Image (tube, rainbow, N blue to C red):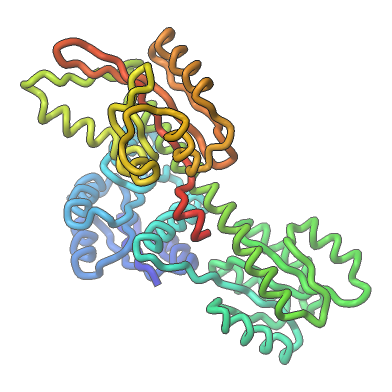
Length: 408
């Protein structure tokens, strides 16, 4: 179980958030201020830190700086108040995973925690273990199914009726719901409807008996991904669950990537708010500029490429370099083919050339290309000033890395 350190000075909010985070499947350490939070960070070694921005004694930014200095890979989520967007973007550029505005949207917090959990699992080369809720009123079939599912290394919680299924769903982070249609207290359809009102981030598989055709149709309307006739074929059930897990992972991955794209867009827009980025490389500020450039490029959670107007490549960050196999001299068809591994389907050198020329003819803009369902490209201009000023093209690509897609 991953461990979350929650630093929040408001006692009622801290208790409510602790209850929610625990329900999401995390162990929680609570701290009422930044000083206690840093002490718990040293002793508790949490995987994720959630901190409020404004706190007495030590504020959120100082907490972030200290933790990132001690443990750069620790994922941090920041709570901010209204009007603190600039502070939040500064925190993102410091390496914070995400920020959430108060009052906290619990759905957004759940997504941020899931993104952090995904990153931790990938760093540790682990697979996240799904949680399956099995609702079946007949004891022997339910226990038999549970044993089969547990042999697949899936965690299973059992419910003997629809009412208990809804209760368990409300206190646990459920990935897959397996439910019979006909159950006491609440039918499978009624239970599924109430679950959807609590949270839509799961997939449902329905067991149907003879004469349940109309109920099966209604189950599909309620969002069931599949229907299985009783008695359940166990091999078929495992295949259907694996497909459901795959679909769920893809939906979640797209949601996470979209949030990362939105964060990157906010950072880029904030940095280019003056309509022009000028990097001064005169000798007196080389050190300062190198640090700025590194922070600028490292703060954007995307693959980055900087090139001249004629597509001569000047810089490729580590994320993109690992995909295209190093730095090439030019952005040509061979390099573009490697970049397509990020999920880009419909983009050509001719399209890129047209966009780049338009930016040079109309400086100060940011072009966004929807390259595929899960991939976006942001293109803008930066000016690098040495003896003379030269303008370059900065291209940031948001997409699923090949190694991530393989794991999904």
